[in-house]
Amino acid sequence: CLEAGARKVVVTDVSCNEPRVCFEHSGIAAAAKAAGAEVVLPEERRFKEVNLGGDVLTAWPVLEPFLAADKVINLPIAKHHSLTGCTLGMKNFYGIIGGQRSRLHQRINESLVDLLAFARPTLTIVDAYRVLMRGGPTGGSLADVELRKTVLAGTDPVALDAYAAKAWWDLDFQRLPFLRIAQARGLGKMNFEEVRSKVVTV
Image (cartoon, rainbow, N blue to C red; front, side):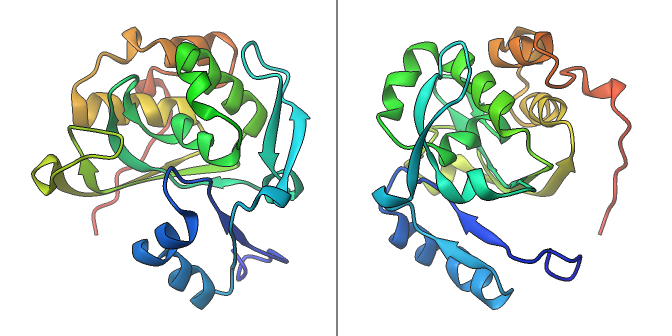
């Protein structure tokens, strides 16, 4: 990003577990700093309550670095999820909000679409080098992880989620509520075959 002309690059996430430990153990903190990016921990003072204008998400605390960004790159890890079937680009935007996120699980599909409509990522890159196939979102055994050595990238987050849901969990994307709602709201196409694509093998 810096080589492409970005003035500043911020890496951040509101993780389920202790953020500093997550950034350090995953290697994200070291890699980001080595590349010249700033790692921002989601401290309480860094949240600002804003109106997200959604059907479920209205006034909610959002991490300020996200609000200040003019380009957003969403980098989810492909995982199974007990409520939505999978965690991919759309679900990953839970990582920009604070508050009692568990409250959103009652209407999780609508909340995912509200977040996508608010976030409008410039680019989504799905890390599927290793995929948590079962027991998500946190998992409990390395036996649930499969090596897929794949990265997906694109500007249509709905199409990417639909493709990954079908490719790795054989989920009928037409029956996933969050994808249907997102398409109905004009946020992308869940029929990924209609989206121009290219496969690169390295």
